[in-house]
Length: 143
Image 1: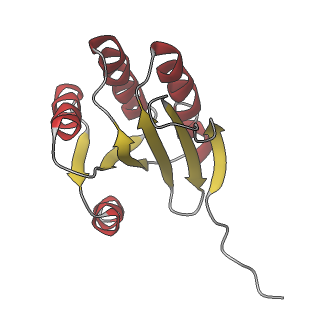
Image 2 (image 1 turned 60 degrees about the vertical axis):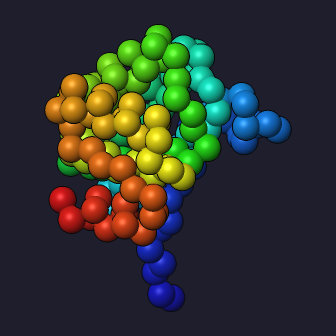
């Protein structure tokens, strides 16, 4: 019997909402890589941001080594200052949990891309924005 490489496993979040206006996320874990794949959509409130933090922070202990985060933000929109502050704090926290790189996939280099670059710069994380998912994954794997 030939062993198969395990694929990403669903970890946390909410199912896609019926509209893109409501905010949510999914997180899948690739145990082999180690990479966490997140997909963000819509407009978040602080409760959604807290659920995302609760899903992401334990990954450092789960991976047990340096890991990276690949975020599909093509359906995510610029957030309120309160949610942005929360995301900034979460980004700083994941760094202390061993996250070494965060690659964000966007549909255009607009406001959200600039918001992410500013946050990454503030907390000192190696972060980059990509239009192409393959390029984002390649950059993550180069670390």
